[in-house]
Image (cartoon, rainbow, N blue to C red; front, side, top):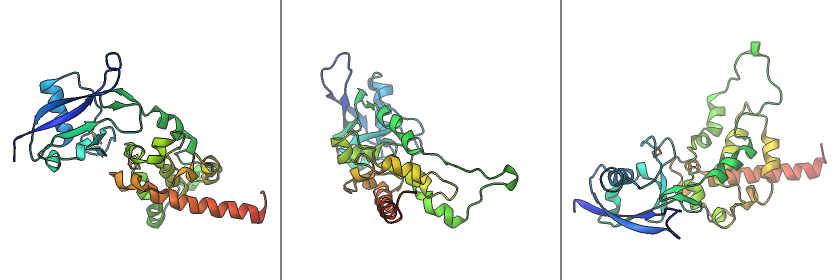
Length: 245
Ligand code: SF4
Ligand code: FES
């Protein structure tokens, strides 16, 4: 195996470039190096102006997502040897505006996320003297998978619906809504349904399923959305049968 590899990186400096361009760098090809190591090598040894985000280097912070050979991945969890002999292409996450080089602007998601109240909603609090809101292991298992989301945005990058219609609230926001709906301590499901039961919400999803394929944390946003659709359909039917409450 060769001991170097070409990394083909998208560069974009808004003050200088009319459109993104690519730049090739030769980086060491080591068994234990991930794509992020290659980018750090470029930044440290070849071109300190290269811009990209990362923090934890262990698949937790969710900030290092990029397109690698057209797939949205966490660059800290993607090994270079899997792309040998290269060249390996590294681009900013698809479906988001580019700020510079490999840095994208996710403020659209950040602004919209609070609409689904991604926190525990309580309409009636129990008296403090009654102690904690206890949960059984079974109740925890109901939502635990959906609580693993690290907001990495890979599912948005993989989602063709979000790519075509940025008004779609998107997979992670719906999966997070479901995470709280299924929490036995939460009372906000009806409020969230009011927000999500429209074409830009739940029903915008056409079940392509690429979000679940891309998700590095096995959150299964596609599954969460389909389960939520079933709940929404049942609630709608109930409201027709029972009339307005
Ligand atoms: S659902 Fe998965 S892919 Fe989407 S933001 Fe959360 S962790 Fe990332
Ligand atoms: S650097 Fe934190 S998830 Fe990759």
